[in-house]
Length: 150
Image (cartoon, rainbow, N blue to C red):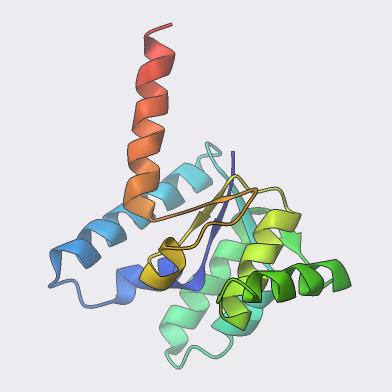
């Protein structure tokens, strides 16, 4: 299964953990990253991830996040088709960088686009599920339970 984590996901473990939702999302992201490392999930990376991360003002976070590129099964490069798709996504009131992330995920045929951005979580995009990391794990748990009942 192919997944795309947006910049919010990679930064979540660095956020203030005093809020229970932030803490739970951080745990979910960490668990998902372990699934990526173990080969249970295929990570997709992109040029827009590199671009956005390059502006992270915290060097330790920036370096930590960029190391995830080495775990990616695919690294999506800039392409006119991606830009065109992003422009169409912007018609759904999705911001430009977010639209480029989603267009890259669609281009790489990801099943899931993981984010903690509440504005994105309210969007419906054909061809991909935009989902919070906690909800993603819930779905994965249901799928695992169904496999055991066969």
